[in-house]
Image (cartoon, rainbow, N blue to C red; front, side):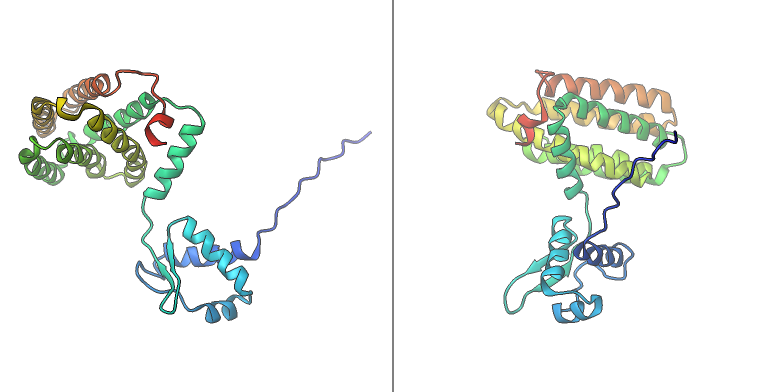
Length: 251
């Protein structure tokens, strides 16, 4: 007796999804640039052969992806937005919350990315990038007496390590993690209030400078070991309760 193959249902995309896919492709390929208006509704309806409700469904899809904005009114219409990591970061945060991921998991993922980036930057072939990093550290030297400003600078320092290493995929992944850690920074600062001490910022700044020196020495192993210890110390300070979940941070 032969085995009957199990049939599978093939889902046919709706017309609105197909229109959205076509417009999305024009945006990500640069045919339509950030700030450009989309053609008016009448022109798009004729071009795609769809009704106004179908076209507006396509607009809703693209708005939910944050790659267009639709302004209502007499002078309204759809305009292209530059894709950024904020939408992906929000969705990633929701997914991790749903899965009950502890915040410590995010800190350790960031640490893995940064330690890898430090090894790349310390390989002796990134003098220009290290010069950019040095300029960033210099700009932050005057922020140590302002906890909120220094916290934003700290986020920039961590993201810069990934960006300067030159892997764009890792930069996007890091940006999603930074979105979560930045939210935790805000909560941490609010909870501490006047108890935050300037020496903490000074110690962080000294660590940045030490890392820069190790990377400029061309010693990847020493630079990575130092930065791993620094990130472990940050984790201990920021996460007094290792069971803290993302629901508590992002809700």
